[in-house]
Length: 241
Image (cartoon, rainbow, N blue to C red; front, side):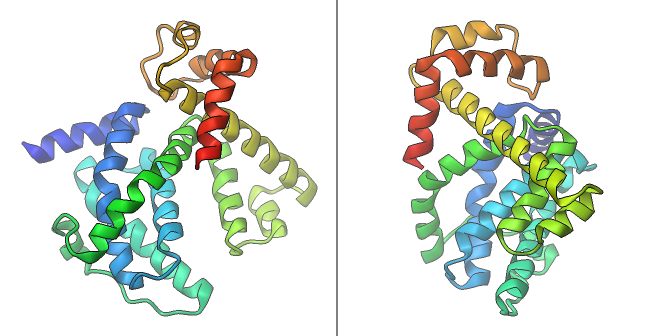
């Protein structure tokens, strides 16, 4: 029964239901922190590896074919990020768990789990970023993923341009546009989650069901651009992070 409920939740998140996505991230974030923290032995890169893992979960969720495999799929992504970060810093970190064992891993316990609990509030800001990324198109997500790898020194701008089949100058323009849209989406997400919520924001898209709908995003973003209350809510939350 629990598996069936979780599969339904994964299917809803995969279809663009933001509430379902937020719940999934909340449920799996402690587990990811726990296994990454143990694998990296409390290394300073733990937060970054967890963030990269969760971002990739969000961006690649539509590609997941079997919702019942969500747990092992997340663990596989986390393991790949651990190995990638190890290669980047010249450290051969071991696999955190055999994949079969990771699927049955218990909820976080012990010292690192206690530390992870303290980090969850800080990740709330990052969770907003993950939710905002859902508003991006498939092409924009590709640009975001490439830009993310640039930030960590894994790609050069020339390599990003080659991956996009454009010139470096055009790649810079595309990255700038995606970053601008992501920041706008982030403002929308934080304004929507603000308490109290601006009543005019809700009326801007009365039929919005919480999914990544392009038409709803246009209406909501048009409102936050001109509404001092919503703009302030987004900037205030961003500064707090």
